[in-house]
Image (tube, rainbow over all chains, first blue to last red; front, side, top):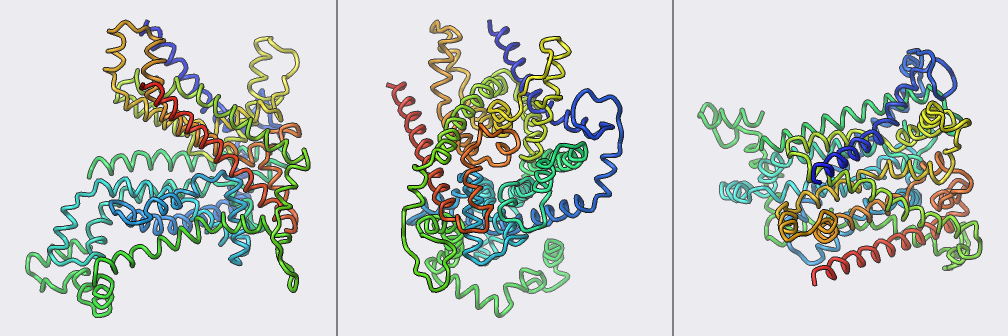
Amino acid sequence: MNRRNRILLSCVYWAFVAYVFVPLILMVLMGFKDSKFIGFPIRSYTLDWYMGVFEDAETISAFLYSVAIAVLSTIGSIIVGTWIAVLLEGRKFWGRAVIFGMTILPALIPGIISAIAFRIYARYLGIEPGMGAIVWAHAVHNVPFVVLVVMARLSTLPKSQIEAARDLGADPLIAFLRITFPYLVPAIMGASIFCLLLSFDDFVRSFFLGGYEPTLPVLIFAKLKSGMSPEINAIATAALLLTAVIGVWAERFTRRMNKDS
Amino acid sequence: MSYDASARAARGTVPASDATFWGRLAGWGPYRAMASFTTASPRRQFIVLAVFPILWVLTQHLGPMVQMLRVSLTDAYPVAPGVEQHLTIEHYLKFFQDPLFWQPFFRTLIFAGVFTFCTLILTYPVAYFLARHVSPKNRMLLLLLLLIPFWVGEIVRTYAIMILLGNTGAVNLVLKWFGLIDRPIPFMYTSFSMGVGIVYLTALYMLLPLYSALEKLPKSLNEAAADLGAGAWTRFRRVTLPLTIEGISSGCTLVFLISTGFYATPVLLGGPSTTVFAETIAGFFHVAGTQWPTGAAFAIIMFLAALCITAAFQRLMTMLRKGDKT
């Protein structure tokens, strides 16, 4: 009985693996198709579409634009998120629950509503649609994730170390920089990678807050609206490889860091 | 680098006090003034630490929502110079007057509910398998395998589904090979293709809470139930399911909220008969900006509706859990 269940469940698992992998594999394959039309069967293969990606100025500039936005917004999220986490973790004060709730808020607002709210607020603040607006929106949106990750790590910090540092004459800031911060580095690294990927993959905020220059997801979306072509497959595959490789590497990296310390 | 310096300082090759970066910083006049000012009392220290985060969450996290609420209540936005601004709820009333508005709204909620349920049914066995039938060593590996596709962005994965389900897509090709169909089934631009896409995008947010709930569940409980003569189905229904309700509840809440917010996926995978509210809202923001208040009002309506539904759902789940204990 148990054995039959086990086999059945493992079939479900592998079917699920197929569900999440097959579409992506097909997409990568389609980029090799030697024809302008998307669709199976693929009769002959070519590398032209993939080669084309590296020569297409529009794609490359969209890619660099996305990377720049991801890096800048991540720096913002990390600074603010760590600060909020240090305030909230292990401290009891009046209104803490309210602050925590507001901290988490951007992560809970459905995508389109958050994009619209940011669009309206950007106008209120006088930020023109474009890179600054996108960086700001991504930074705000990613703060909750940083706070949660850093708080989790902070809760395991041995308090005695801080006390020892204070006893030896370090003021709170130096104690933070020399004890707490190094201890938080694995969490901050993990959170940074997560923020980078969230920002790089984000469509809806970039779409509503962007100016004329598209980020990579916005460019792919615009191209898709005017029709499918293997060229899009090649661009999407490049984005896919980058994000998946960074994601897997980060996963392993944070695991190792957490094990070491 | 500072560690090297302090190591050297410890060996006594250089004067200890101001040799390191930190020592120099601590001895630096302006820094010392700042430090003694900010840490004069625990109260002041707390204020210095707290002011920035509190201002940030108020202005950056809450601010956009408040401003959206304000815009939704004004009669015209942006305000023309010299014209007086009036408070009004006309934009909210507009919602009820036209089926073009409230139909997508209810469609969105129903779709989100159905897709959430589908995600739950699909991922529960997967989470169950990982947590109960796999050795802890392989568990991480099998879980990581599932995480890989979820690092890939929304647009790219939506496009992958388009290729899968298109008229010349993989599914139709396979069906034709097996001789099940003569001409392709039009999967695309229907609620079905939208469902496949949205479940694909949200599955992880369901899988992880379910997995962590199932992993926490002690095996002994199931064994005890089996010793008392409970069959597999009874064990699942009376032990496993009630004890993982928390995971189910948080997974469903997350997935529901996320799936009401999709914009690009319905645009690319849906058709004219599956317009969701996100597209309706977005429509008000494409034009120069005179219709922003209406769009803001609609966004508020949707946010409140989604919040109410998830709150009611969580309430129901808590009641179920409590009811089972007594």
